[in-house]
Every structure is written in C-alpha cells, then in structure tokens.
Length: 187
Image (tube, rainbow, N blue to C red; front, side, top):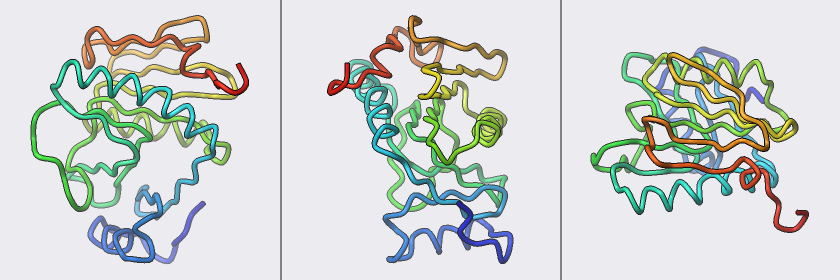
C-alpha cells in the first residue's frame, strides 16, 4: 500500500516521517522514493518466527553477528531506498544502531511473502538487496511452500522436502523446510 506519493522522498525526509511519534510503530519502507507500509499477517509472523528462532539459536552458538526482525537497512550511496527485510543477519561485531536505518544491507535477508505483496515486487527487492551488499536472500512463498534461495552468483528453489542451509554466510546452519511451514495447531 503506497502511503505518500506527492513527492519522491529522500532518506532524510523518510526517516523524519517514519520516526515521528505517530508513525514509529508502523513498518515503513522507502522504495525508490515512495513510502510503503508492510502489513504482516498471523501466518506471516508464524513463518518468520519458525525461521528466526533457529537463526537466533545458531547465533548464540556462533556469536559472529546478530539476527534482527523488521529492521530498516540502507546504503549510504542511495538516497531513495531504506528496506526492511522480515529477518536480517548482519555479520560482525559492530555496535547496534539505536536510531534510524542500519547503514548497510544485511549479509542474510529473509522475505516472507504476505498476501498483499506481489512476487514481482519481492523479486525486485531481492535483486536490490543483492546488488547492494546482501550475500544471501531467502524468499519464502507460503502458498507454494517453497523457498527461493539467492546469492549474487546463483539461485535455486527448495521444496517442502528439502533442507535450507546457511551456505558461506552461516556455515553449519540447516533447517528443514517442513519446520519452516509447520503450524503446531494444524499439523
């Protein structure tokens, strides 16, 4: 849903708008100068947690970065984009950003498709993330129960019987897709 289309917003204008008291609890992204709101569903949240939980456990065992949810990222050379992956893993031991966007794309970005998100738009976001520093992107498609895995050099599709791995970004990490799509109430 496009919220503002009066002008092409810059990062500075956007962050002022997004960080204002009336908007601070909203999930707002800046996409090519347009302010876009993310509206996740319960199913979306369950799948995000089914991935974030094991990632959090992995990071506790191998503390070389941090896993965060719904965190804005930007690159300093782009004045018209600030993106919010559903899950981000940022490698390294730098201090956490306490206000505004993280000034880099995550090493791993995870996007779970919500009903209002087009596959075309999500794939454009994947390309943007990879072109600006992400090394691994998982695009989760709940309706099809598949995950599209992207790196700067490759892409593949995993189905429900496959196992998702962290590759060079998260060595040793693995998670069966069945666990990602599992619903404990409706097994």
